[in-house]
Length: 387
Image (cartoon, rainbow, N blue to C red; front, side):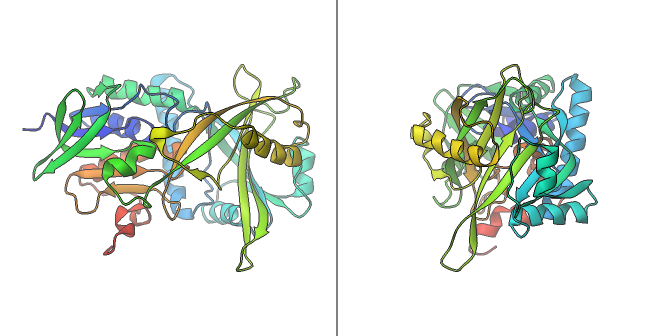
């Protein structure tokens, strides 16, 4: 008989939340991680993440974002932790760019409190920002910021309190599947469970033995800029802001866009967080270059100088995060095709805000329950030859 009902490989965003949810439902859960989460080796670190409900990637995400917001607040009440802080969120770009039009479509469809602002209105409210006159912005009035390291620790503490076992510093070498169980092989031991979830971030594709181009790890330089002491870039005075800036036209005459964001200062160190969201380099997480080059810092400095005046001569420190991208930019959630007991999760660089609801969704899928959301958009079968 299997020792566990479920084994979860990778205890970051999706893995920690799913471990918590399954354990709280009374199942025997084992969580494995090759490091000690929360850590800086994967995708869940970085001090802050933005939360929004008017979702530019598609209105299908909005009900999930709304449920996640409620769950963040429930967890805060339960554990006495501040996990989510309200702050406005701006999406800035030309009126016809996908980011702004997608934001406005989501906000209108779901009646999410928002405003459409001209560039002049943005500059008047937040002189820290300098969008050109041809840009507009969508403002989500009650968006927020979550704290990923604290959140991961909270999820894992809750999982352990509910009876889950965690084995850390445990690299998974392989897994095998039999008709009624899955065997997970580490360097120390073989563990057996009824079902397996692989939620190992940039390692997920290889661990699931998927085609190389299905889940693509991306290297993401993230920067923290030392800001002036006037507190104008701190939480409460400065909104989260996401930019979609036109680049050169493609061969078909369609504009390409460069995407970047900044998040306000939140901690004792007076540092603004900034990073590009697209046009990222493929990478192998096993041999990842974790040093951020001068060319990479110069690239972010150039856009900050253009759109956030006053930061031209500020110093910065940088780190590397990882995205795990799908071909269409949407989540990969569900059972591995041609498998009976093995599931996968990949979040395409925009999943942390959904963490608690992802725990519910994956727990439902792994126990043959139907999630309350339409999962077709995220099904692994969409990449199959016979979906």
